[in-house]
Image (cartoon, rainbow, N blue to C red; front, top):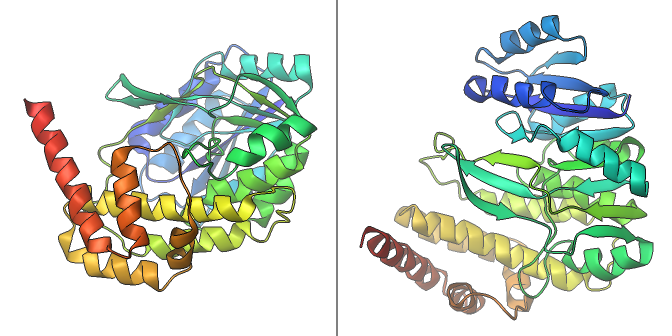
Length: 339
């Protein structure tokens, strides 16, 4: 068997059938589909079992809810394929995704294939993202030269895709790192696995093919802002630090940029959502976490004026001012769009 497609399933009955069908409709048929029901409270367990009755390539695992890391761990333990492809249960893949991955692997013998993403909202493409690298095969020296500098983030805020989904990874490389990710990680689990995979890979193929269709869900946007995200990102940093990062020459600088960028993203999310009552909590959480000192050390070059001003204010510990600035940017953008 060539591919094991692992799909963690939780509370997505509206999207699950589409996700499963996108796998079953693949032009390449040598795969198993592992559906990991992570204690889903809706109709997902039944949907999984119904599909398993129709296609013997489908395996269903039912387990108590433990989160994404736990579900992926359960899936990788059952995987038999030579390569593993992770798919989120509310997303889709193009019908030739596995065939394309197989051809690339067959031609290059690479250990990782990373595809580009197409972000889809209400059936329409809203954006496309990729690894910010030229398409092609990267061997050991070129992995160090081109991929390592973008492992977390370069000076221009460019980075390889943090997502584990959308990648075909050799099972013998992925398994130990997937099993090593703490199940306590609830934000940034993907990065905790992709970083060590890239560190141990001897060959990587970067593809510009938009093989993965990410569903932008309006129904999944939380109305409440969680200031604990700042500490959850701190957990991700501590998890990454478990790895031997000596191969990455500028790792400490990248870590500072990543920390700063994530805090900026959280601050922007709060500002754009008009979560004014959380301003003080955001400020205190950043100051009382590892992020405070990393933000001061973060260096950027070619970034947008909005990012540059916001990060300048953050470096000065003017988090409230940065919040109001980002909120103002959101209001101006809304006015311009209406006009």
